[in-house]
Amino acid sequence: MDHDPKIPAPNVILHAHKDWHLWFPLLEKHSRDRGVWEYINPDVDTLMPAIESLEPVYPAIPPEPVKPTSPTSEQTPEQQAALEEYNHKKAAYQLAAKNHEEDVRVYKVLCNQWVRKASKIANINEWINRTVSQDLLLPITMQLLRGISTPQAVVRELKKRLSPSDSNTKNLLRIQYRAHLEKAKTGRSNVDKWFNDWQALYAKAQAFELHEVKGDLAVTDFLDALAAKIAPDWAHNLRQTITTASAMGQPTMSLDDVARVFNLTMQEHEASGGKGRSTGVFSTFGGESAPSGGNSGGSTGGPRKYCPCKPGKPSHYWEPTKCHRLQQAITGIHGQNAFSAGLNQPV
Image: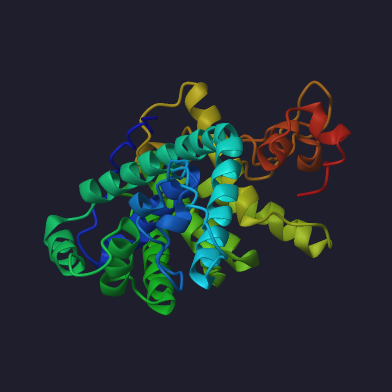
């Protein structure tokens, strides 16, 4: 049998309502990746039959029929009917014999497909058994013994018992997202962990289209959170850059853009020798304050411009709209290519 590699066990175990929004997306992903979601999806009107019942049947040739004895006198109606039945069976036998080789070839193809699909469904079922609390799974399994007992039936019962309504999920996620922004203001979080957790909450909030992650207010809330303890100078100066762009009628940065710039800045801070990623040490990305007057001359004879690409000090002599590092963080395109691709929009 073709073997579908075992799915790694996740960190989440389905114990209660609170785990559903983490567990179910993983189940759907693994099922879709294997092309068997139709056998797992709990939201269909009619459950799929058990995969075992769909095993292809070998194309056997029917036995060759025996011709009835020819009558010595005129045929009776019964004899005529028997002869007609024989002729039908003879034709079916000859057709089956003629097509048998091709039917066997098709059977082997269908059988291989069935074996692969059955292996994948069995793998999903085994993953369900490993990731669902036995206190939940055992009663459902016993209940389903009286009817259809398939992975799809099990997931449907789990959803009936544990899945919160969309409104409840949104309310809970909204509370979690707001609380996480407030957590950044306490100064008691590791920056890397805080940002990784924020990204996970942000992705969920986007999936549910929460207004907390949309528009300028979302950017303001994010920068306010960073401004308290994690990166005061960086956040204040980037907010000033965005406010200036907005006042001039120029495109402003989205929350996606700001998050990418923040992530790139963290990476460059670490690469440049920044140590101690706690909020206390990382609060100004290296302990340098932003310039009070923004005037730091250099060999070009002009003042340096502050840019979010390098926090805490004037960065370079050109405007942020011409900064390759900032453009790369926003667009994902490296260096000059960002501009040649027509992406040098003001930020």
